[in-house]
Image (tube, rainbow, N blue to C red):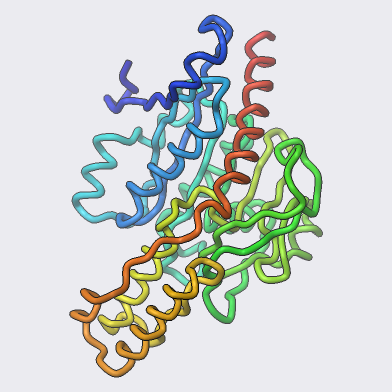
Amino acid sequence: MSNQDGSQPMMLTTSSLLNTRHPSDRRELVIGLVNNMPDGALHATERQFKGLLIAASPDFPICLRLFSLPGVPRGDQAQLYVSQYYEHIGHLWSGRLDGLIVTGTEPRARSLANEPYWPALKQLVDEAEDHAISTVWSCLAAHAAVLHMNGVQRRPLREKLSGVFECTKIGDHEILADAPLRWCVPHSRQNGLPEEALVSKGYRILSGSLEVGADMFVKEGRSLFIFLQGHPEYDPDALFREYRRDVRRFLAAERDDYPSMPRGYFDSDTEAAFAVFRERAMRDRSSDLLLHFPQASGKADAWREPAVHWYGHWLSYLAQRSNAQHCL
């Protein structure tokens, strides 16, 4: 069945999913993904969230609906792809939707309120409170949501926070049931939210560390809002691709400083190879040098299991409340 604009919703299934329960007992969960990531990460973000939702949903089928905010800068190819495979944001609430995931994008303005998609994002925050059982706000989307809801301003960091960091469980919530005391999460951002301001506005911090500050925090009103400053959905190579992009920008003189290596992500041999490349880049700053950039991948096992764990609890939370509403 097609959506109103002709695009097709995506069914996410696994072989184990098909055999766990009798078909008549399974109520499909409908998840909306508002994918605002820039063109270079648009497809990867789709794959990351699809893979994570599949891994986290062994007990019920998932239907994924794709959206993107108007005003997000797009090239011609990406805009054509979005127009073909994404629903118009105006149709977000026209069909059934149990849960929502909203990604950030790479900021271009110093103030979020000056971004071209800011009016649409503010409207989305307000509507999600009224229409979604729960919404996950990822990275910049989390920063924008708390700014609009409570005026909490993010603060620029001294340097980009990039890498895989150990976070500690600080608060209790059913989405973290049976979670370990500590787990690892990828972070990649230039700004952070002050914990004291979040707490003063009624947000409950669930995990964090001295290095990353608040990692996961929630606010419950008519809807459960979950805010993530990290990226548990990242695939093994995501931080590598971002690091390579930032190095390319340095070599092309699009940025003045050479980017710092992601922390806690590469093994010692890979870090040594990147240090040698950095020395060469500082001597011979040329875009052609990127052809010799070392290949590497990160330590996905460090964060994949805990991400699947809590996303599974989030889907169960949605299923319970969706079924309760269906029975009313």
